[in-house]
Image (tube, rainbow, N blue to C red):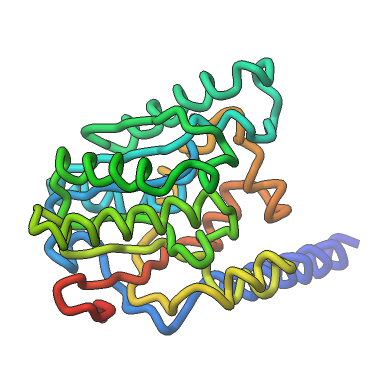
Length: 276
């Protein structure tokens, strides 16, 4: 009987390993060049992340923590306090969610080593309704203050997840940089767009995943994702702590064992070319 149980356990282990390695292929992309640090690869010493919501920065833990380890200055702008989010789990009255999520964003920023951080008060889900000039001016002002040589922002046509706020802030970041360059002001040389791996979008993302996959560029870089930082980040973002587990139907730690890389399309604004 014991040998039968041992065979069954071995077969179960083999099946689990097969599923694990099959899923890992969904979260990889051979088009991307492997680097230890995106910031290090482009020589960036000052970085500004421009995002829409608290927890958006969870996509770039690896980029931020590797840059910090290399001595880079980090700054981040989050345009909304995330007040319209769906709590998972419920941690507060919904009317107070923006206060809680703003605090979570600031706390996670501190844990990531961000030196200067702003969380603005635009309505969650309402960024497309805010006049473009207002948003562009505020992002341009942030660029002037923080003087990044690398900006990290969403790709405007897909926003990494298809969220309209993400797409809006990605476009605003691009237009703010273009305005500064046209005016002869200090502007970053590089923009890095965080991307969800294409095969995971097509296999697991349904209609939205197909939209994002079809409207994002190929990645130029991949970098280690820093699993410990990502797991810690979702613990800090308590109002969204179960988000990835529900979205991907697996425990958070297991997901980041499988999805252990970050992918970026990096553009050199001096040459107008992708940085390969």
